Image (cartoon, rainbow, N blue to C red; front, side, top):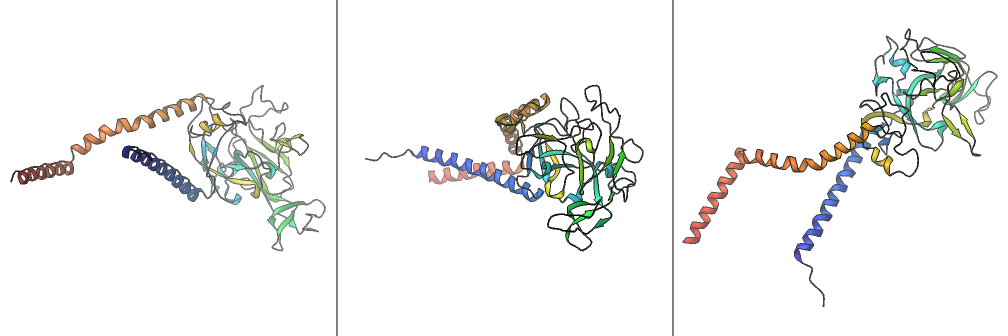
Length: 349
């Protein structure tokens, strides 16, 4: 004999299922909206390290570990470099993102499948004098020319051999190698904030220097705001720079990556949602976890959760008071009382 399920239990089960469906639908709509807004999926990345911090204790507006960052799907030509953003008279002069001039980009090191890097675009090299390749399939170039697989050749085909370079945001044009100093004269003063710990091969300088850099191919020099002028591309660009590490198939590490190419670009960093990514880092089994999360992020996260949970209990009585005092509610209550009185009179008859 089957037992009847109490009616209240059925209603309670449906109520829970409905709330779960509503919550899932809201999350789905949020992700869909962010996807349309940014053009990338997933539209957010979690910052894991302290390479972009401006203050040890964290700061809203700059990028700290535990922050969620929107990733906008834009081509590399739209990236604004620090050089362009700090050159007086440049169309991008004074463009800032996350506390400094120029865009912050998300990219794969040398195009490798690994955790993406989120660092600032500093300086860009683009081809000036080019030659058609001797063999486009193998990237064979004439003597003294560098194979660039992404730039368009004079014959209209993708892939060309580069002899000289231009550098937007500087006065450099048609140069074989690139040297530039960010000392505050022609572009902004990039403070290296060096001390005895961040001596970088005893190359002491208060500002960032690019010295005799041969780009090999078009691309962007990148640097973490907290990395004391140790550019990701290493000592071939800036004397004493450590460079980002990469691991080959044999497990050996090399330091210093190539200039960031368009096909390696994941996106451009947009708005910041502080603290919320700390939850993911805390639950992650790999990577640095929450090692680099500033103390302020924990305070902000816990405060946000408390406010979110307490909001219904605080807002409900306030909303009730506001609604009770509104003319519409008073009229509705008056009509309800009138209707009840009328029903009582009819029953008496």
